[in-house]
Length: 197
Image (cartoon, rainbow, N blue to C red; front, side, top):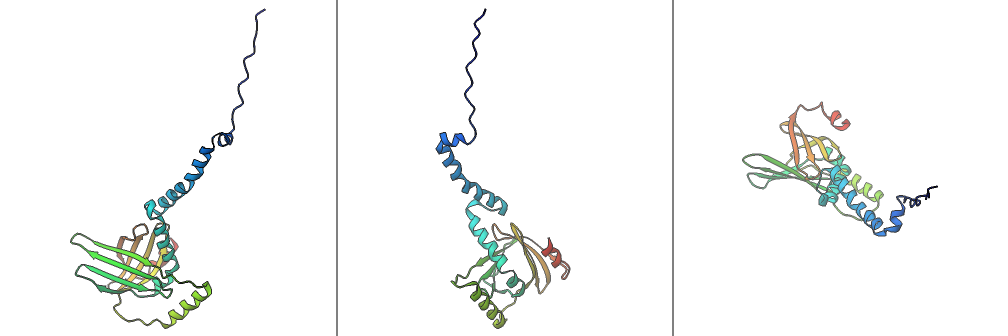
């Protein structure tokens, strides 16, 4: 009779969570990379550089917080030179929208930048101040144009602007605050589409 030996039993396989007990540095490394991965995902969603995510998010918040202002308040503009123009929209919240326009021999570039007015106050006091400011604002100066409607998207702002020449549709990239597209459109038909889409 042949000597039959049973093979040694295979060691029990490890469950996935046991690796974290044996290799604690693996757990620390994975946990430490979560903020970096989340930042990368935010940057991808905003179509921005990873280093600019906080700035882009703040600009987006300012667009959202001041939608009513951008739709109602005029843009005061002045020429800085033959090719450079700056426009300012003053909001009752104290925030300011700057519009920089540069014309070169090859193209026209428009950039928008929000400047936040920092003030320590309660939400109720802020609302009362904004209401009072709206009632007392006097329109004077050079009028550039007024936004008819504005919509904030995940990575862009779409707005219809009315000026002396009629209406224009502008698409502003939140990552760089540049107007990525602009075209003349008939006034009056597109606001519902911009806000709904």
